[in-house]
Image (tube, rainbow, N blue to C red; front, side, top):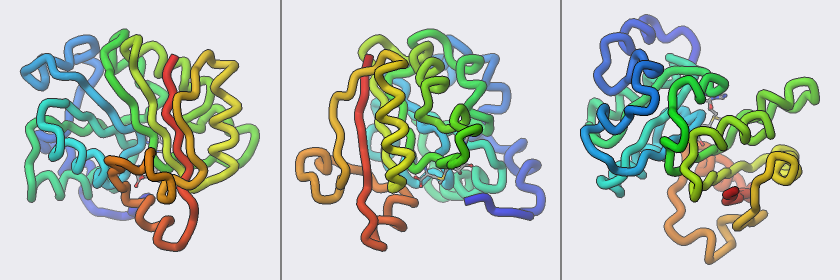
Length: 212
Ligand code: SAM
């Protein structure tokens, strides 16, 4: 996903109004950034932003924030926003590890994790976005009834994610090992860039929805 050597991507981002540049300053006050009290939903690791932009377009009464660590990738989202600006969507360039420094307790209504990097080596398990370490962070920032929706084509990562739920105190609400053939869970499904790529190759898509 990382697009290397895009000259000046950091400079373009620094000038961009769709990106919140000092996100820590808004901790606990994101409603002021949006100018309303609508619920806030975030995608962690949004890539080029197709999924979160589609959601924001479909749901103008919900606020969205897309988080991405690489400027070269985020730049693609910015270019799409320039062509089709959305008032209910902002981007942040940051490492997800810092998420509790950016959002206050119970400030986020829902979290989306889509095709998160698998980090296959055991010693990197803590870096996986559905790991218990991350679930603890999400627990802090989510409203009590908040949910996490996770999709992946990676069976090992999905199994790992399921095993993390109980130790971290989360409850499995819904799951499928073949989303695109699951009539119920497929209702209202919004495709991500990676989802289209992998499902078109015939890979099954795994999905869970969890809450506390
Ligand atoms: N969610 C998109 C999709 O489904 O099409 C992109 C998936 S891509 C495989 C994963 C993205 O997550 C990459 O753009 C990567 O840079 C970003 N990412 C991975 N770990 C991250 C982290 N710790 N903090 C922020 N972004 C991260």
